[in-house]
Image (cartoon, rainbow, N blue to C red; front, side, top):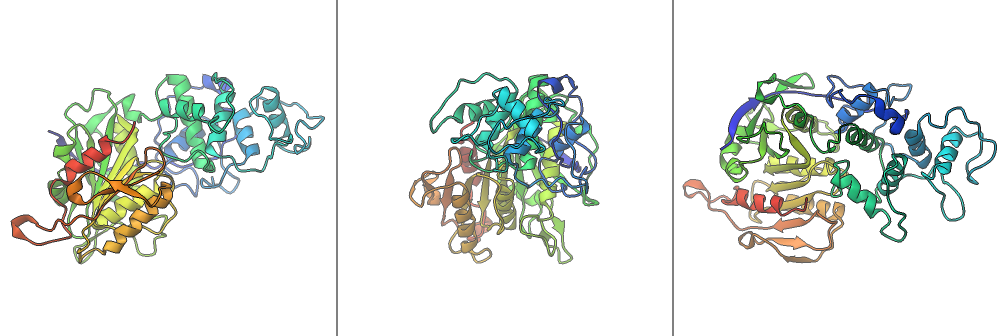
Length: 466
C-alpha cells in the first residue's frame, strides 16, 4: 500500500544561453549546486521544463543570457553556436590567418573555435569542404560533437546509422532518452542546455542524468508542503511507495481530474494506487471556479502555454527534489477535462513524458515537442465529451509519433483497441473506441471511467521499452 501525503510546493528555475567551456577543463567545477532554483533567471523562461538544468549551468558560470535578459529557449542552435558552446575558451587568443573551411572567414566571431575544433578532429566539413556555420544543428549531430569534445571514445562509423552509437550512449547514461525525440529534429537552446548539464553531472558524479536530485539526497515528506505557482498556493495528493527512501529510482504518474470531479474523487475511482503500488502518483487539484467546477487554464491562455503547464513542471521537480524519481519514466493520465489536459501535457512536454493515457478527452491545438507513447479511450456514444475530441488527440499523436494509418488488433480486446503501425521506436499509439457504459449503482453512462482501466494502463506503461 502507498502511504498518502498531501504536498503543496513550487520550484521555478529559468533558462540560459551557453557560452563558457563545459568540457574537460570545466570538470574541475563542483557539481554541488542543486537542480532547483527559487526564481527565474531570465525573463522568457518561466514555462520551460529545462529551467533547473539551465539554472544550474548559470550558477556555475557556464552559460549566460542575452543583453536584454532573455534566453530565447526555443531558438534553434546553428553549427557555429554549437561549436562555440563546446569549445568555450579552449581556442585561447589564437588568431586565424587563413580559412580552415571555405565558408569560415578569419574575421568571423566563431572562426577561432571552429578552426580549433577542426584541428582537434571534433568536427569535419560537409562534402565539398564547407562547414555551413549558419545551418541548424539536429540532435544527432549535436550529440556526436558533444561526445567527441568530451573525448568519449567512439569508432568511426559511416552509413545511414552513423548516429546510433551516440544516441545509445546518451540513452544508457540518462543524458537524453532515445524515445524523447527524433534524431533529425533541430536542437533548441533549452534542450542544448539540458544535454550539457547532464553530461557534466555524469562526468563529475557518475550519476545518470535521468535521476532526480532526490536520488542523491532524498529529503522525503518532511519538507515544506506548500507549492506556489504564479503567486497562488496549489495542493496535490501524493501516493508514496512503501520503500521510497531506499535510493531506488521510481516512476511517477501525474493524474488529472475533470471539470466536476475533484482530485480526491478521481484518486478513488481511477484505481491507480492499487495498480501501481511501487510508483509515485501525484493528483494535482485544478483551480475551482465560482460555479464549483474546475479548470486547468485561464481565459486567454495560448494553446502552447496553458496556465497549469507550469503546475505540472513544478510538481514533478518538487517531487524529484524530495524523492528518487526516474525522469525517463514520467507518465500522465486523465479523465474528461483531465484527459484533455493529460493529452495536452503529453504534446507540450513530448520530450519529457514517456507515456500518456486519456479517457474521454481531446487535446490542445498546439505544436508538440516530441513523441510520446499514447493510449486513448473513448465511447462513441459519449454525450458529455465529443468523440471527435479524442479522434483529434489520436491524429495529433499519430502525426507526432510518425505512425502509419494502418492498424493491428491490440490489448485489451474488450476495449476494441487497435495499435497503429510503423510509429517511432518506443512510441506506440493505441486507440480504444470502447463500448462500456455500465456505471456504478446501475447507471448508464458512456462518459464513465471503465472498470479495469487502471490494470490496462499498467500493462501499457510496463510494455514500453526502457
